[in-house]
Amino acid sequence: MTARILSGKELTATLETEMRGEAERLEAAGSPPCLAVVLVGADPASHTYVRNKIKAAERVGIASVDKFLPDSTTQKELEGVIAELNADPAVHGILCQLPLPKGLDAERITRLIDPAKDVDCFHPSNVGLLAMGTPRFLPCTPAGVLALMTRNGVAISGKHAVILGRSNIVGRPLSLLLSRKGTDATVTVCHSRTPNLKELTRQADIVVAATGMTPEWVTGDMVKEGAVVIDVGMHRVEDASKKSGFRITGDVHYESVAPKCSAITPVPGGVGPMTITMLLQNTLTAARNPA
Amino acid sequence: MTARILSGKELTATLETEMRGEAERLEAAGSPPCLAVVLVGADPASHTYVRNKIKAAERVGIASVDKFLPDSTTQKELEGVIAELNADPAVHGILCQLPLPKGLDAERITRLIDPAKDVDCFHPSNVGLLAMGTPRFLPCTPAGVLALMTRNGVAISGKHAVILGRSNIVGRPLSLLLSRKGTDATVTVCHSRTPNLKELTRQADIVVAATGMTPEWVTGDMVKEGAVVIDVGMHRVEDASKKSGFRITGDVHYESVAPKCSAITPVPGGVGPMTITMLLQNTLTAARNPA
Image 1 (tube, rainbow over the protein chains, first blue to last red):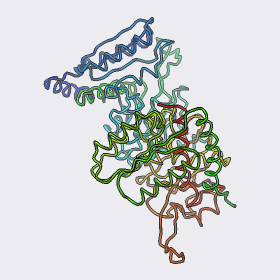
Image 2: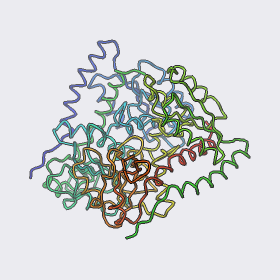
Image 3: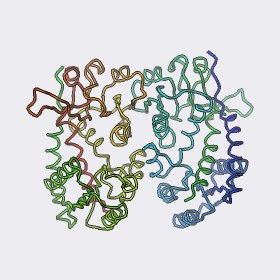
Image 4: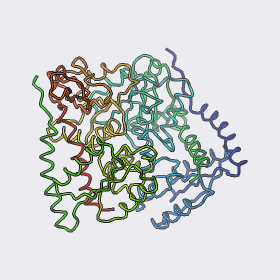
Protein backbone atom coordinates (compact mmCIF):
# COMPACT_ATOMS: atom_id res chain seq x y z
CA MET A 1 0.00 0.00 0.00
CA THR A 2 1.34 3.44 -0.82
CA ALA A 3 0.48 5.77 2.00
CA ARG A 4 -0.96 9.15 1.29
CA ILE A 5 1.26 11.83 2.81
CA LEU A 6 -0.67 14.23 5.03
CA SER A 7 1.47 17.31 4.55
CA GLY A 8 1.17 20.05 7.10
CA LYS A 9 3.42 22.20 5.00
CA GLU A 10 0.97 22.12 2.09
CA LEU A 11 -2.15 22.47 4.22
CA THR A 12 -0.65 25.39 6.10
CA ALA A 13 -0.16 27.23 2.84
CA THR A 14 -3.79 26.64 1.84
CA LEU A 15 -5.11 27.72 5.22
CA GLU A 16 -2.90 30.81 5.28
CA THR A 17 -4.42 31.92 1.98
CA GLU A 18 -7.92 31.45 3.40
CA MET A 19 -6.99 33.31 6.57
CA ARG A 20 -5.51 36.23 4.64
CA GLY A 21 -8.92 36.81 3.08
CA GLU A 22 -10.62 36.61 6.45
CA ALA A 23 -8.10 39.00 8.04
CA GLU A 24 -8.70 41.49 5.22
CA ARG A 25 -12.46 41.29 5.73
CA LEU A 26 -12.05 41.92 9.47
CA GLU A 27 -9.73 44.85 8.79
CA ALA A 28 -12.16 46.32 6.27
CA ALA A 29 -14.90 45.98 8.88
CA GLY A 30 -12.83 48.11 11.25
CA SER A 31 -11.56 45.32 13.47
CA PRO A 32 -8.02 44.43 12.30
CA PRO A 33 -7.11 41.14 14.03
CA CYS A 34 -4.35 41.44 16.59
CA LEU A 35 -2.37 38.90 18.60
CA ALA A 36 -0.37 39.87 21.69
CA VAL A 37 2.73 37.77 22.25
CA VAL A 38 4.21 37.75 25.74
CA LEU A 39 7.72 36.35 26.13
CA VAL A 40 9.70 36.48 29.36
CA GLY A 41 13.46 35.91 29.43
CA ALA A 42 16.13 35.05 26.90
CA ASP A 43 15.59 31.33 26.24
CA PRO A 44 16.74 30.89 22.61
CA ALA A 45 14.23 28.13 21.78
CA SER A 46 11.35 30.25 23.07
CA HIS A 47 12.59 33.21 21.01
CA THR A 48 12.63 31.03 17.89
CA TYR A 49 9.08 29.77 18.52
CA VAL A 50 7.80 33.27 19.14
CA ARG A 51 9.54 34.67 16.08
CA ASN A 52 7.93 31.97 13.94
CA LYS A 53 4.51 32.78 15.36
CA ILE A 54 4.92 36.50 14.70
CA LYS A 55 6.15 35.86 11.15
CA ALA A 56 3.20 33.58 10.41
CA ALA A 57 0.81 36.19 11.82
CA GLU A 58 2.35 38.79 9.52
CA ARG A 59 1.95 36.51 6.50
CA VAL A 60 -1.81 36.23 7.06
CA GLY A 61 -2.35 39.87 7.98
CA ILE A 62 -2.68 39.55 11.75
CA ALA A 63 -0.95 42.36 13.60
CA SER A 64 1.11 41.44 16.63
CA VAL A 65 1.87 43.31 19.83
CA ASP A 66 5.15 42.03 21.20
CA LYS A 67 5.75 42.13 24.94
CA PHE A 68 9.31 40.90 25.36
CA LEU A 69 10.11 41.12 29.07
CA PRO A 70 13.44 40.62 30.86
CA ASP A 71 14.35 37.55 32.94
CA SER A 72 14.05 39.76 36.02
CA THR A 73 10.30 40.31 35.50
CA THR A 74 8.32 39.69 38.69
CA GLN A 75 5.06 37.79 38.92
CA LYS A 76 3.28 41.04 39.74
CA GLU A 77 4.75 42.84 36.72
CA LEU A 78 3.79 39.97 34.43
CA GLU A 79 0.28 39.92 35.83
CA GLY A 80 0.10 43.65 35.18
CA VAL A 81 1.02 43.11 31.52
CA ILE A 82 -1.67 40.43 31.17
CA ALA A 83 -4.28 42.67 32.82
CA GLU A 84 -3.38 45.49 30.43
CA LEU A 85 -3.74 43.21 27.39
CA ASN A 86 -7.01 41.79 28.76
CA ALA A 87 -8.37 45.34 28.97
CA ASP A 88 -7.17 46.43 25.52
CA PRO A 89 -10.05 46.12 23.04
CA ALA A 90 -7.63 46.23 20.09
CA VAL A 91 -5.99 42.97 21.28
CA HIS A 92 -8.01 39.87 20.32
CA GLY A 93 -5.66 37.05 21.32
CA ILE A 94 -3.05 36.75 24.06
CA LEU A 95 -0.31 34.17 23.93
CA CYS A 96 2.14 33.81 26.81
CA GLN A 97 5.04 31.67 25.65
CA LEU A 98 5.82 28.79 28.02
CA PRO A 99 7.87 27.75 29.88
CA LEU A 100 8.24 30.87 32.02
CA PRO A 101 11.52 31.52 33.86
CA LYS A 102 11.84 29.94 37.31
CA GLY A 103 9.97 31.76 40.04
CA LEU A 104 7.04 32.75 37.83
CA ASP A 105 3.75 30.90 38.26
CA ALA A 106 2.70 29.78 34.76
CA GLU A 107 -0.53 28.18 35.95
CA ARG A 108 -1.66 31.42 37.57
CA ILE A 109 -0.77 33.44 34.47
CA THR A 110 -2.61 31.01 32.19
CA ARG A 111 -5.74 31.44 34.31
CA LEU A 112 -5.48 35.24 34.33
CA ILE A 113 -5.75 35.52 30.56
CA ASP A 114 -9.29 36.50 29.59
CA PRO A 115 -10.88 33.25 28.30
CA ALA A 116 -12.23 35.22 25.33
CA LYS A 117 -8.61 36.01 24.34
CA ASP A 118 -7.12 32.60 25.27
CA VAL A 119 -6.08 31.56 21.77
CA ASP A 120 -3.90 28.73 23.12
CA CYS A 121 -7.08 27.22 24.67
CA PHE A 122 -5.23 26.55 27.94
CA HIS A 123 -7.71 28.25 30.32
CA PRO A 124 -9.71 25.75 32.42
CA SER A 125 -13.01 27.21 31.28
CA ASN A 126 -12.01 26.79 27.62
CA VAL A 127 -10.81 23.23 28.25
CA GLY A 128 -14.13 22.62 29.99
CA LEU A 129 -16.15 24.00 27.08
CA LEU A 130 -14.22 21.64 24.80
CA ALA A 131 -14.93 18.68 27.10
CA MET A 132 -18.62 19.65 27.11
CA GLY A 133 -18.74 19.60 23.32
CA THR A 134 -19.23 23.37 22.92
CA PRO A 135 -15.71 24.73 22.39
CA ARG A 136 -14.98 28.44 22.12
CA PHE A 137 -11.49 27.79 20.73
CA LEU A 138 -9.92 24.54 19.57
CA PRO A 139 -6.61 23.56 21.18
CA CYS A 140 -3.95 24.25 18.57
CA THR A 141 -2.08 20.99 18.06
CA PRO A 142 -5.20 18.78 18.34
CA ALA A 143 -7.03 21.09 15.91
CA GLY A 144 -4.06 20.75 13.55
CA VAL A 145 -4.30 16.96 13.71
CA LEU A 146 -8.02 17.13 13.00
CA ALA A 147 -7.57 19.51 10.07
CA LEU A 148 -4.87 17.31 8.53
CA MET A 149 -7.40 14.50 8.42
CA THR A 150 -10.60 16.33 7.48
CA ARG A 151 -8.94 18.53 4.85
CA ASN A 152 -7.43 15.45 3.24
CA GLY A 153 -10.68 13.50 3.15
CA VAL A 154 -9.75 11.01 5.88
CA ALA A 155 -12.98 9.57 7.33
CA ILE A 156 -13.22 9.85 11.12
CA SER A 157 -16.86 9.12 12.02
CA GLY A 158 -17.28 5.56 13.31
CA LYS A 159 -13.53 4.91 13.18
CA HIS A 160 -11.54 3.68 16.16
CA ALA A 161 -8.82 6.16 17.08
CA VAL A 162 -6.14 5.04 19.52
CA ILE A 163 -4.25 7.95 21.04
CA LEU A 164 -0.88 7.29 22.63
CA GLY A 165 -0.37 9.89 25.35
CA ARG A 166 -2.66 11.81 27.69
CA SER A 167 -0.92 15.19 27.94
CA ASN A 168 -2.90 18.37 28.53
CA ILE A 169 -1.48 19.82 25.31
CA VAL A 170 -2.16 16.99 22.87
CA GLY A 171 -3.49 13.58 23.91
CA ARG A 172 -6.25 14.59 26.31
CA PRO A 173 -7.79 17.47 24.31
CA LEU A 174 -7.44 15.50 21.06
CA SER A 175 -9.44 12.66 22.59
CA LEU A 176 -12.22 15.14 23.41
CA LEU A 177 -12.09 16.63 19.92
CA LEU A 178 -12.20 13.32 18.05
CA SER A 179 -14.99 11.75 20.07
CA ARG A 180 -17.34 14.71 20.21
CA LYS A 181 -20.68 14.66 18.44
CA GLY A 182 -20.29 15.38 14.75
CA THR A 183 -16.73 14.01 14.63
CA ASP A 184 -17.76 10.72 16.20
CA ALA A 185 -14.63 8.62 16.45
CA THR A 186 -14.55 5.89 19.08
CA VAL A 187 -11.49 6.95 21.06
CA THR A 188 -9.12 4.99 23.28
CA VAL A 189 -6.53 6.93 25.30
CA CYS A 190 -3.39 4.93 26.11
CA HIS A 191 -0.50 5.98 28.35
CA SER A 192 2.52 4.77 30.26
CA ARG A 193 0.34 2.47 32.41
CA THR A 194 -1.30 0.71 29.47
CA PRO A 195 0.04 -2.87 29.51
CA ASN A 196 -1.11 -4.17 26.12
CA LEU A 197 -0.43 -1.23 23.83
CA LYS A 198 0.26 -3.22 20.68
CA GLU A 199 -2.98 -5.15 21.04
CA LEU A 200 -4.86 -1.85 21.01
CA THR A 201 -2.91 -0.02 18.31
CA ARG A 202 -3.27 -3.01 15.97
CA GLN A 203 -7.04 -2.60 16.11
CA ALA A 204 -6.94 1.12 15.41
CA ASP A 205 -8.18 2.71 12.21
CA ILE A 206 -6.36 5.86 13.33
CA VAL A 207 -3.23 5.87 15.50
CA VAL A 208 -2.03 9.14 17.00
CA ALA A 209 1.43 8.99 18.55
CA ALA A 210 1.79 11.83 21.04
CA THR A 211 4.00 10.69 23.87
CA GLY A 212 7.08 12.61 22.75
CA MET A 213 9.24 10.41 24.97
CA THR A 214 11.18 8.12 22.63
CA PRO A 215 12.07 8.56 18.96
CA GLU A 216 10.53 6.11 16.49
CA TRP A 217 9.11 3.69 19.04
CA VAL A 218 5.88 3.08 17.09
CA THR A 219 6.91 0.36 14.66
CA GLY A 220 5.28 -1.40 11.73
CA ASP A 221 4.20 -4.43 13.77
CA MET A 222 2.07 -2.13 15.93
CA VAL A 223 -0.30 -0.90 13.20
CA LYS A 224 -2.80 -2.67 10.99
CA GLU A 225 -2.82 -2.63 7.22
CA GLY A 226 -4.61 0.49 5.95
CA ALA A 227 -4.34 2.49 9.17
CA VAL A 228 -4.03 6.27 9.30
CA VAL A 229 -1.01 7.24 11.41
CA ILE A 230 -0.51 10.71 12.87
CA ASP A 231 2.87 11.50 14.41
CA VAL A 232 2.91 14.38 16.88
CA GLY A 233 6.41 13.58 18.17
CA MET A 234 9.46 15.67 17.34
CA HIS A 235 12.95 14.49 18.24
CA ARG A 236 16.44 15.48 17.21
CA VAL A 237 18.53 12.33 16.83
CA GLU A 238 22.19 11.94 15.93
CA ASP A 239 22.78 11.01 12.32
CA ALA A 240 26.37 10.86 11.05
CA SER A 241 25.13 10.76 7.43
CA LYS A 242 23.81 14.33 7.78
CA LYS A 243 25.97 17.38 7.42
CA SER A 244 24.46 18.82 10.59
CA GLY A 245 25.14 15.59 12.45
CA PHE A 246 21.47 15.09 13.31
CA ARG A 247 18.06 14.61 11.81
CA ILE A 248 14.53 15.41 12.97
CA THR A 249 12.25 12.45 13.56
CA GLY A 250 8.99 11.65 15.35
CA ASP A 251 7.48 9.04 17.65
CA VAL A 252 6.84 6.83 14.61
CA HIS A 253 9.36 4.60 12.83
CA TYR A 254 8.36 5.87 9.41
CA GLU A 255 10.18 3.26 7.31
CA SER A 256 8.34 0.30 8.84
CA VAL A 257 5.00 2.02 9.46
CA ALA A 258 4.39 3.97 6.23
CA PRO A 259 4.20 0.90 3.93
CA LYS A 260 1.20 -0.38 5.94
CA CYS A 261 -0.67 2.94 6.09
CA SER A 262 -3.40 4.42 3.95
CA ALA A 263 -2.23 7.84 5.16
CA ILE A 264 0.58 9.12 7.35
CA THR A 265 2.06 12.43 8.51
CA PRO A 266 5.76 13.00 7.90
CA VAL A 267 8.13 14.48 10.50
CA PRO A 268 9.11 17.21 9.91
CA GLY A 269 6.42 18.87 7.80
CA GLY A 270 3.39 17.02 9.18
CA VAL A 271 1.69 18.08 12.39
CA GLY A 272 4.45 20.51 13.35
CA PRO A 273 3.55 23.44 11.07
CA MET A 274 -0.17 23.07 11.88
CA THR A 275 0.06 24.29 15.48
CA ILE A 276 0.91 27.88 14.59
CA THR A 277 -1.72 27.92 11.84
CA MET A 278 -4.40 26.88 14.32
CA LEU A 279 -3.23 29.57 16.74
CA LEU A 280 -3.88 32.10 13.99
CA GLN A 281 -7.28 30.53 13.28
CA ASN A 282 -8.15 31.02 16.95
CA THR A 283 -6.99 34.63 16.75
CA LEU A 284 -9.38 35.22 13.86
CA THR A 285 -12.15 33.50 15.84
CA ALA A 286 -11.39 35.84 18.75
CA ALA A 287 -11.44 38.88 16.46
CA ARG A 288 -14.86 37.84 15.14
CA ASN A 289 -16.14 37.42 18.73
CA PRO A 290 -14.39 40.14 20.72
CA ALA A 291 -14.30 39.98 24.54
CA MET B 1 -18.15 -17.22 38.75
CA THR B 2 -20.11 -15.57 41.53
CA ALA B 3 -20.03 -11.84 41.03
CA ARG B 4 -19.28 -9.58 43.93
CA ILE B 5 -22.14 -7.13 44.39
CA LEU B 6 -20.96 -3.51 44.50
CA SER B 7 -23.66 -2.08 46.72
CA GLY B 8 -24.16 1.65 46.67
CA LYS B 9 -26.65 1.31 49.48
CA GLU B 10 -23.99 -0.15 51.79
CA LEU B 11 -21.20 2.18 50.69
CA THR B 12 -23.45 5.20 51.11
CA ALA B 13 -24.05 4.24 54.73
CA THR B 14 -20.29 3.93 55.35
CA LEU B 15 -19.53 7.25 53.67
CA GLU B 16 -22.34 9.04 55.49
CA THR B 17 -20.81 7.97 58.81
CA GLU B 18 -17.42 9.32 57.71
CA MET B 19 -19.01 12.55 56.52
CA ARG B 20 -20.89 13.07 59.77
CA GLY B 21 -17.57 13.16 61.59
CA GLU B 22 -16.16 15.63 59.07
CA ALA B 23 -19.26 17.86 59.30
CA GLU B 24 -18.96 17.90 63.09
CA ARG B 25 -15.31 18.90 62.88
CA LEU B 26 -16.18 21.74 60.49
CA GLU B 27 -19.00 22.89 62.73
CA ALA B 28 -16.73 22.80 65.79
CA ALA B 29 -14.21 24.87 63.84
CA GLY B 30 -16.89 27.54 63.34
CA SER B 31 -17.73 26.73 59.73
CA PRO B 32 -20.87 24.55 59.70
CA PRO B 33 -21.18 23.15 56.17
CA CYS B 34 -24.16 24.46 54.24
CA LEU B 35 -25.71 23.54 50.89
CA ALA B 36 -28.12 25.85 49.07
CA VAL B 37 -30.75 24.05 47.03
CA VAL B 38 -32.49 26.02 44.28
CA LEU B 39 -35.63 24.54 42.79
CA VAL B 40 -37.86 26.34 40.30
CA GLY B 41 -41.37 25.16 39.57
CA ALA B 42 -43.59 22.30 40.67
CA ASP B 43 -42.22 19.30 38.74
CA PRO B 44 -42.93 16.35 41.06
CA ALA B 45 -39.83 14.34 40.05
CA SER B 46 -37.60 17.34 40.73
CA HIS B 47 -39.26 17.83 44.11
CA THR B 48 -38.58 14.21 45.00
CA TYR B 49 -34.91 14.48 43.99
CA VAL B 50 -34.45 17.68 45.93
CA ARG B 51 -36.18 16.28 49.01
CA ASN B 52 -33.85 13.27 48.95
CA LYS B 53 -30.82 15.54 48.70
CA ILE B 54 -31.95 17.68 51.64
CA LYS B 55 -32.73 14.60 53.75
CA ALA B 56 -29.30 13.11 53.03
CA ALA B 57 -27.65 16.43 53.89
CA GLU B 58 -29.52 16.44 57.21
CA ARG B 59 -28.38 12.90 57.97
CA VAL B 60 -24.71 13.86 57.69
CA GLY B 61 -25.05 17.20 59.45
CA ILE B 62 -24.97 19.53 56.45
CA ALA B 63 -27.42 22.42 56.81
CA SER B 64 -29.48 23.32 53.77
CA VAL B 65 -30.87 26.62 52.56
CA ASP B 66 -33.93 25.92 50.43
CA LYS B 67 -34.84 28.31 47.67
CA PHE B 68 -38.07 26.96 46.26
CA LEU B 69 -39.22 29.37 43.58
CA PRO B 70 -42.51 29.49 41.64
CA ASP B 71 -42.90 28.49 37.99
CA SER B 72 -43.35 32.17 37.18
CA THR B 73 -39.77 33.01 38.23
CA THR B 74 -38.00 35.11 35.60
CA GLN B 75 -34.43 34.60 34.43
CA LYS B 76 -33.47 37.87 36.12
CA GLU B 77 -35.01 36.83 39.43
CA LEU B 78 -33.28 33.46 39.33
CA GLU B 79 -29.96 35.13 38.52
CA GLY B 80 -30.52 37.40 41.51
CA VAL B 81 -31.00 34.40 43.80
CA ILE B 82 -27.79 32.81 42.49
CA ALA B 83 -25.86 36.07 42.97
CA GLU B 84 -27.12 36.33 46.53
CA LEU B 85 -26.04 32.76 47.30
CA ASN B 86 -22.67 33.34 45.63
CA ALA B 87 -22.13 36.32 47.92
CA ASP B 88 -23.24 34.58 51.12
CA PRO B 89 -20.14 33.33 52.98
CA ALA B 90 -22.28 30.93 55.06
CA VAL B 91 -23.29 29.02 51.89
CA HIS B 92 -20.58 26.60 50.70
CA GLY B 93 -22.33 24.74 47.93
CA ILE B 94 -25.05 25.77 45.46
CA LEU B 95 -27.17 23.26 43.61
CA CYS B 96 -29.71 24.35 41.04
CA GLN B 97 -31.99 21.43 40.24
CA LEU B 98 -32.32 20.77 36.52
CA PRO B 99 -34.25 20.81 34.29
CA LEU B 100 -35.48 24.38 34.73
CA PRO B 101 -38.96 25.35 33.52
CA LYS B 102 -39.21 26.43 29.88
CA GLY B 103 -38.00 29.95 29.21
CA LEU B 104 -35.18 29.83 31.74
CA ASP B 105 -31.61 29.50 30.45
CA ALA B 106 -30.08 26.61 32.40
CA GLU B 107 -26.68 26.94 30.72
CA ARG B 108 -26.42 30.57 31.76
CA ILE B 109 -27.45 29.78 35.33
CA THR B 110 -24.94 26.93 35.57
CA ARG B 111 -22.19 29.32 34.51
CA LEU B 112 -23.24 32.00 37.00
CA ILE B 113 -22.72 29.75 40.02
CA ASP B 114 -19.40 30.60 41.68
CA PRO B 115 -17.05 27.74 40.60
CA ALA B 116 -15.90 27.47 44.23
CA LYS B 117 -19.52 26.61 45.19
CA ASP B 118 -20.30 24.47 42.12
CA VAL B 119 -20.80 21.18 43.97
CA ASP B 120 -22.43 19.58 40.92
CA CYS B 121 -19.17 20.18 39.00
CA PHE B 122 -21.08 21.48 35.97
CA HIS B 123 -19.24 24.81 35.53
CA PRO B 124 -16.93 24.82 32.47
CA SER B 125 -13.93 25.83 34.57
CA ASN B 126 -14.51 22.89 36.92
CA VAL B 127 -14.98 20.50 34.00
CA GLY B 128 -11.74 21.93 32.57
CA LEU B 129 -9.83 21.41 35.81
CA LEU B 130 -11.02 17.81 35.80
CA ALA B 131 -9.89 17.36 32.18
CA MET B 132 -6.52 18.85 33.11
CA GLY B 133 -6.07 16.33 35.91
CA THR B 134 -6.35 18.86 38.75
CA PRO B 135 -10.02 18.74 39.76
CA ARG B 136 -11.51 21.08 42.35
CA PHE B 137 -14.64 18.94 42.68
CA LEU B 138 -15.39 15.50 41.26
CA PRO B 139 -18.53 15.17 39.13
CA CYS B 140 -21.04 13.36 41.34
CA THR B 141 -22.12 10.27 39.40
CA PRO B 142 -18.63 9.54 37.97
CA ALA B 143 -17.14 9.98 41.46
CA GLY B 144 -19.76 7.55 42.74
CA VAL B 145 -18.74 4.98 40.13
CA LEU B 146 -15.08 5.43 41.07
CA ALA B 147 -15.79 5.09 44.81
CA LEU B 148 -17.83 1.92 44.27
CA MET B 149 -14.75 0.37 42.68
CA THR B 150 -11.95 1.75 44.87
CA ARG B 151 -13.82 1.23 48.15
CA ASN B 152 -14.49 -2.38 47.19
CA GLY B 153 -10.91 -3.13 46.22
CA VAL B 154 -11.51 -3.31 42.46
CA ALA B 155 -8.17 -2.70 40.70
CA ILE B 156 -8.31 0.06 38.07
CA SER B 157 -4.70 0.93 37.21
CA GLY B 158 -3.64 -0.69 33.94
CA LYS B 159 -7.13 -2.05 33.30
CA HIS B 160 -9.05 -1.40 30.10
CA ALA B 161 -12.31 0.43 30.83
CA VAL B 162 -14.88 0.66 28.05
CA ILE B 163 -17.48 3.35 28.70
CA LEU B 164 -20.76 3.19 26.80
CA GLY B 165 -22.02 6.76 26.46
CA ARG B 166 -20.41 10.18 26.17
CA SER B 167 -22.83 12.39 28.10
CA ASN B 168 -21.64 15.49 29.92
CA ILE B 169 -23.06 14.11 33.16
CA VAL B 170 -21.59 10.60 33.15
CA GLY B 171 -19.65 9.12 30.24
CA ARG B 172 -17.39 12.03 29.35
CA PRO B 173 -16.34 13.10 32.88
CA LEU B 174 -15.99 9.47 33.95
CA SER B 175 -13.56 8.87 31.10
CA LEU B 176 -11.46 11.79 32.35
CA LEU B 177 -11.60 10.53 35.93
CA LEU B 178 -10.64 6.93 35.13
CA SER B 179 -7.76 7.74 32.82
CA ARG B 180 -6.12 10.47 34.85
CA LYS B 181 -2.70 9.96 36.43
CA GLY B 182 -2.92 7.96 39.62
CA THR B 183 -6.08 6.14 38.51
CA ASP B 184 -4.51 5.02 35.24
CA ALA B 185 -7.13 3.00 33.42
CA THR B 186 -6.85 2.78 29.65
CA VAL B 187 -10.20 4.20 28.60
CA THR B 188 -12.30 3.74 25.47
CA VAL B 189 -15.39 5.92 25.04
CA CYS B 190 -18.09 4.36 22.84
CA HIS B 191 -21.30 5.98 21.66
CA SER B 192 -24.13 5.72 19.17
CA ARG B 193 -21.70 5.96 16.23
CA THR B 194 -19.48 3.10 17.39
CA PRO B 195 -20.02 0.29 14.88
CA ASN B 196 -18.35 -2.65 16.63
CA LEU B 197 -19.45 -2.22 20.24
CA LYS B 198 -19.44 -5.88 21.21
CA GLU B 199 -15.89 -6.34 19.92
CA LEU B 200 -14.77 -3.58 22.28
CA THR B 201 -16.84 -4.47 25.35
CA ARG B 202 -15.66 -8.09 25.15
CA GLN B 203 -12.08 -6.90 25.61
CA ALA B 204 -12.91 -4.71 28.58
CA ASP B 205 -11.78 -5.42 32.13
CA ILE B 206 -14.32 -2.81 33.23
CA VAL B 207 -17.55 -2.04 31.35
CA VAL B 208 -19.55 1.05 32.31
CA ALA B 209 -23.02 1.23 30.77
CA ALA B 210 -24.18 4.84 30.79
CA THR B 211 -26.33 5.42 27.74
CA GLY B 212 -29.63 5.42 29.60
CA MET B 213 -31.46 4.83 26.32
CA THR B 214 -32.64 1.21 26.38
CA PRO B 215 -33.33 -1.10 29.33
CA GLU B 216 -31.09 -4.16 29.68
CA TRP B 217 -29.40 -3.90 26.28
CA VAL B 218 -25.96 -4.95 27.59
CA THR B 219 -26.17 -8.73 27.50
CA GLY B 220 -23.95 -11.59 28.67
CA ASP B 221 -22.44 -12.17 25.22
CA MET B 222 -21.04 -8.62 25.32
CA VAL B 223 -18.75 -9.03 28.34
CA LYS B 224 -15.78 -11.24 29.03
CA GLU B 225 -15.45 -13.70 31.88
CA GLY B 226 -14.25 -11.92 35.02
CA ALA B 227 -15.22 -8.41 33.94
CA VAL B 228 -16.34 -5.69 36.31
CA VAL B 229 -19.66 -4.23 35.13
CA ILE B 230 -21.02 -0.89 36.31
CA ASP B 231 -24.60 -0.02 35.41
CA VAL B 232 -25.46 3.68 35.48
CA GLY B 233 -28.80 3.21 33.70
CA MET B 234 -32.14 3.52 35.45
CA HIS B 235 -35.38 2.51 33.73
CA ARG B 236 -38.89 1.78 34.86
CA VAL B 237 -40.22 -1.17 32.88
CA GLU B 238 -43.63 -2.80 33.00
CA ASP B 239 -43.72 -6.03 35.01
CA ALA B 240 -47.06 -7.71 35.59
CA SER B 241 -45.53 -9.91 38.30
CA LYS B 242 -45.04 -6.86 40.51
CA LYS B 243 -47.73 -5.36 42.64
CA SER B 244 -46.85 -1.91 41.35
CA GLY B 245 -46.98 -3.16 37.77
CA PHE B 246 -43.38 -2.16 37.07
CA ARG B 247 -39.82 -2.78 38.17
CA ILE B 248 -36.65 -0.67 38.12
CA THR B 249 -33.85 -1.92 35.91
CA GLY B 250 -30.67 -0.60 34.31
CA ASP B 251 -28.83 -0.63 30.99
CA VAL B 252 -27.48 -4.09 31.85
CA HIS B 253 -29.31 -7.40 31.49
CA TYR B 254 -28.33 -8.55 34.97
CA GLU B 255 -29.36 -12.20 34.64
CA SER B 256 -27.07 -12.93 31.70
CA VAL B 257 -24.22 -10.56 32.64
CA ALA B 258 -23.79 -11.17 36.40
CA PRO B 259 -22.76 -14.85 36.08
CA LYS B 260 -19.73 -13.80 34.00
CA CYS B 261 -18.63 -10.91 36.22
CA SER B 262 -16.11 -10.67 39.02
CA ALA B 263 -18.08 -7.68 40.28
CA ILE B 264 -21.29 -5.90 39.28
CA THR B 265 -23.53 -3.09 40.49
CA PRO B 266 -27.21 -3.88 41.03
CA VAL B 267 -30.03 -1.60 39.88
CA PRO B 268 -31.52 -0.24 42.04
CA GLY B 269 -29.08 0.16 44.93
CA GLY B 270 -25.86 0.36 42.94
CA VAL B 271 -24.70 3.62 41.37
CA GLY B 272 -27.99 5.41 42.07
CA PRO B 273 -27.55 6.20 45.77
CA MET B 274 -23.92 7.27 45.23
CA THR B 275 -24.70 10.48 43.34
CA ILE B 276 -26.21 12.28 46.33
CA THR B 277 -23.43 11.05 48.59
CA MET B 278 -20.81 12.51 46.27
CA LEU B 279 -22.73 15.81 46.16
CA LEU B 280 -22.41 15.94 49.94
CA GLN B 281 -18.70 15.07 49.70
CA ASN B 282 -18.27 18.04 47.37
CA THR B 283 -20.15 20.25 49.82
CA LEU B 284 -17.71 19.26 52.55
CA THR B 285 -14.81 19.93 50.16
CA ALA B 286 -16.29 23.37 49.48
CA ALA B 287 -16.72 24.03 53.21
CA ARG B 288 -13.05 23.17 53.76
CA ASN B 289 -12.01 25.51 50.94
CA PRO B 290 -14.46 28.42 51.09
CA ALA B 291 -14.81 30.80 48.13
